[in-house]
Amino acid sequence: MIVKTQAIVLRMIPFSETSRVVLWLTSDHGKIATIIKGAHRRRSPFVGQVDLFYTCELLVYLRLFRGLHIVKECSPLKTRTLLRSRWRATACASYFAELAAQISPLNAPHPELFRVLDMALDYFADQSALELGLFWFELKLMKAMGLAPQLKECLRCHRPLQEDNDFVAEPGARAARRGQERESVFSCARGGILCKACAPMVPTSLNAGMPITPDILGILRFWQASRSWRSAQSATCTPRQIRELERIMGFFMQYHLEIANPARAVALSILRTRLGPTS
Ligand SMILES: [Zn+2]
Image 1 (spheres, rainbow, N blue to C red):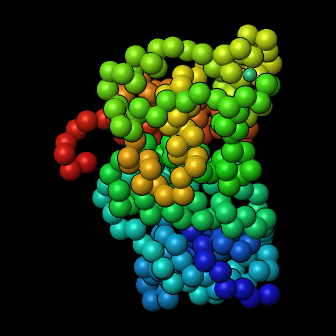
Image 2 (cartoon, rainbow, N blue to C red; image 1 turned 90 degrees about the horizontal axis):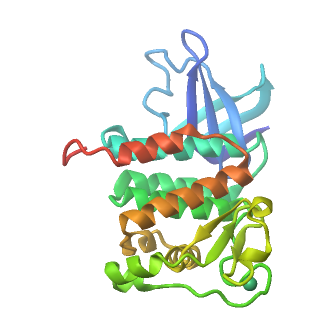
């Protein structure tokens, strides 16, 4: 069966002197592994048509050849050329592409994951607030996987949770001072919040829990309710808040996705490396 679909390049591996294996996340057929025969030949129609982080229109013959489907035609829809020169953005794109490769099973359609990855790569190729964008897209990716945390009410008593929206209007001392008042627990295992009253009644060891401050809860709720990545850019976070977001999102994702993704630590480390204004 020959199908046409949009597809994002997740990995590229040499297969022989002239062919290569490409792992894609497609909009209609989930993750597929393909072979592009003759990709390295000088006059190949595939020259310049496929590269890492491209979104392409793909004509693919869904018939396995040595465990791989066969690409018949490929034309790029988005090349995201800035990901070839902005190495911080490249680190973020690599992390997300690898994450998508790890969490999506072969040949299982997942259009929402495709949409989030496509949007994330657009963002990293074009925007500057990379660190907050990375956390925002992690939250959206978890939602796409059906793992959005419950942030509106306590998991145990179901009372509405107190939050702190000062991080938008007044990101300075007031928000930081309030942030010192630890009062609720983010339960990674149960995917939500235990309020100050309920948290002591549930052993942290059973929840894979960690304290969460009202300001961090406010940021996560603000981002979870938003449909546009512009909300990531409108939040001005203190260094402590960024560390907390990194810790909570990292632990939550690792707990539920059950993967070790060292590319996340590498991406965050690169984002914090200060070498020059053009990097
Ligand atoms: Zn409660």
